[in-house]
Length: 75
Image (cartoon, rainbow, N blue to C red; front, side):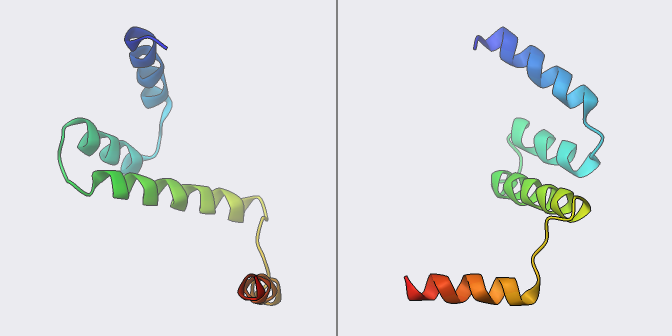
């Protein structure tokens, strides 16, 4: 992907984005702001995905989580 097409795609994605906190993180990253901006971006992305999962009903019961943890300990 060329630089021009990448810039165009990013501009379009940013124009469509409604999440103000995500836009703030992008601003920090692009302006060379906080050293923790990348970490903040990753955490924000994970939080947004978690919210989508909750809204879509992709959740586990406590028993299911405990069973998964127990199976991982055995490995």
